[in-house]
Length: 245
Length: 103
Image (cartoon, rainbow over all chains, first blue to last red; front, side):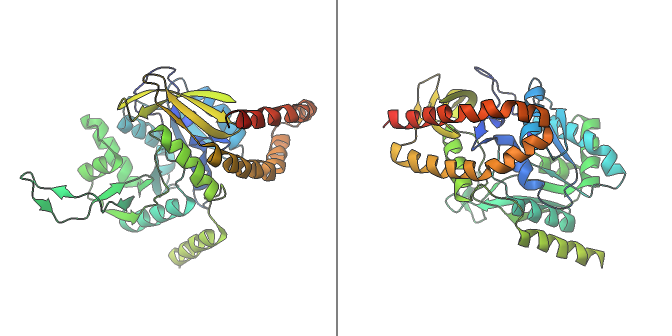
């Protein structure tokens, strides 16, 4: 869970993921939804230097039953992801972690169902990311001709098989490569296919002040519950039982 | 009324700027860019029903939140509970007043 921001600091320098949102801090909402899924075993939260104490006290208050490892992020998204993977390395190398999900903590409305879809797709294909169709946008050739392709907006959470993901970031670290996002690093160093899953229009990223108003309304509309409903948990168990057979 | 500050993108400045955020209870009531003064506010017509819906959820989830707090740190919970209960009427009065005053 990436909560370290983008390194752009102005004014009071308050990280937006620490803002209140309907009674909780922005960053704890998505952790809450993800951890309602069975088999989500390790949570690593990457925070900005200076935010550690605030984050730890917030976690103790808002997610007292969830074990969260807090690590300090780097100067880029790539470096923060690498630090999170280093924290997960023992679990990955011990074979305890099959899939790693990377999520932006500024997206508090990523539901348990979306986490489930992403994890299952990553298990099946190797990598997965949620996308939302953008029918109002179109791609153009350099000459200005319209390209007849599907245009989508990419969201997080994004999930990848743990082994190849760790290998890709280890190779990137050795070469000094800094990717713009997780998929770019995976594509450069592995041949793992990345599968697109239908995203969720509610899964907005808090960027503008308006997004906070919208997130509040969307949470209220969902009765403040985007957790794994019994049918989601049952579907997960059926899927896992099918794997076991 | 609680005031928070955070770095958010201002659509008018087209920059990440410091914003001042005003909350009525748990609900965001208004935001202001401290660079250009761009001000966004929830209308009274939208705020009151949103506040009431949020209040309903706060009340419904209170027993569970108290239970977790008691389990986590029973001594602090029981020693601070009387003071917290006594502060509630004034807290709600302040929240209602901030809602009514803007109308």
